[in-house]
Length: 284
Ligand code: 9MG
Image (cartoon, rainbow, N blue to C red; front, top):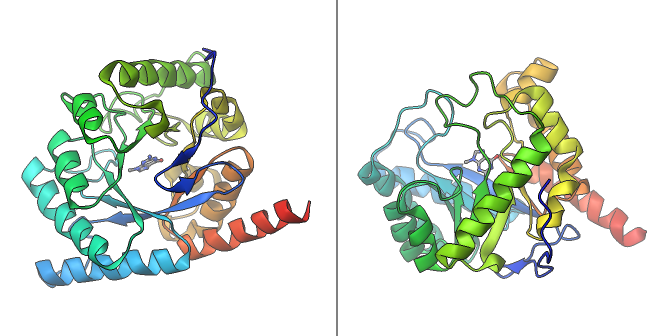
């Protein structure tokens, strides 16, 4: 694995202490046509805000707003359609809450308009590798989550292959950190994510989770998304709506192994687990 000489110990970003001692919950807010009732645009925005506020009240300090699914085979969405989905929701959340808003996008124009509307974190599953994304993120000067993905959402689960996954994800982080530095993105704005389920088999995912701590050598907070992922279907034979326990347990294990942020659907249940974890830390 590539070693960085001088890991940056400053993990205070977005107004939040992002050390493993103070794990944060990022709540998932998908704005896709099947996510909300079909009662028209206003109803969709109102429902989305309600769901965001419920997640905040349950313990989320970041809301991740996404307008395009990254599941294999999901329909691609145009820039205009994605803007139409996420921007009004971000504006509406910002009007009623000062929660940190993240935009789950790889498109530079969506990044720009989402930040203008109130987002302060870009969650990019392509780690700013799409044309124009690096320069856009540099000009916006907000937080950026760089996620590892082998290939792209349509091909990633077609025989994922690594000679040594921990080394390869580590080299990817090193390369993207350098690309960000060259583009003028402050290292203190960066969060790293190994990208569970993005071009990985069950065995790869389990190894990443078991050895997550190794990625702390890059000196940046780690974000982890294990919520409801198909790896739990494969390991436990559970359907998506039966994966709450697996999601909560794995979020807790990720935090124990060094994650600063967990991206989850089941915020209240995850918050309970993390409250117990923090109480144990204090009692120790
Ligand atoms: C958008 N999205 C879906 N899964 C994700 C994960 O594991 N990490 C991040 N950063 N984003 C994700």
